[in-house]
Length: 258
Ligand SMILES: [Zn+2]
Image 1: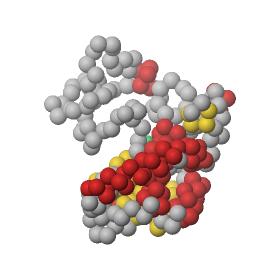
Image 2 (image 1 turned 90 degrees about the vertical axis):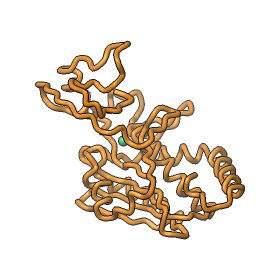
Image 3 (image 1 turned 45 degrees about the vertical axis):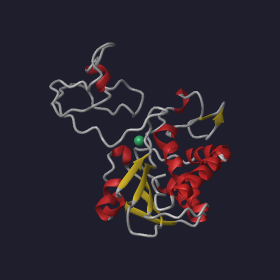
Image 4 (image 1 turned 45 degrees about the horizontal axis):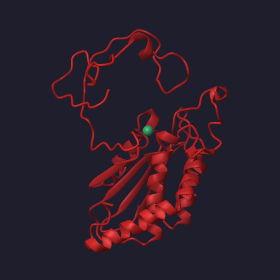
């Protein structure tokens, strides 16, 4: 891991092997850690993350990690846990959000969205992909580093944030305003990707003007037809370019996916 460069290379390799072995050995525990979190919904809207923050704060406390709890507005709770390093830099940050979109009508689900069931090797639940899975991976990494007393050159921060599904102003945005050092020299956000996917940095900005007429609605909310599916019937046909479906695409656009 990038938190280990202060160790001699052979020692670093040994620590990595030790941690990978531990992760494989404790695979079921890792899955259960994720599934248990799914039993504590934090639907956004309304975005109340108090209960799930309580849940993770207990785990972090038990592990002996220092945890800061912030609530910049009632109900919008984020956590920052820190593993100290020998030096002030480099800082590495793991970021993930606590909130997720609502389950909406549970009768339309083929399994209870908040039971935390693990079936046929799969963890079932609303918000498991986006992003309790990635969040749990970051949490487990911190717990392992702590348990194994892995010496870190710089601090490692775990940001478990609120408000992401509503834009993040009261979660990551607020925290970075208050504590800009949390941005770190490097940061990893465990948002969902394809199984072997890893996106480095951001794609940049694509600006376009789009006019649509209908009731505005986020695609992740509810089961109604969205404005985007109705008023913009297609963005791309098979065989067409996979570049972003701009009306007038700026030359700076570097989108790799639609
Ligand atoms: Zn997400």
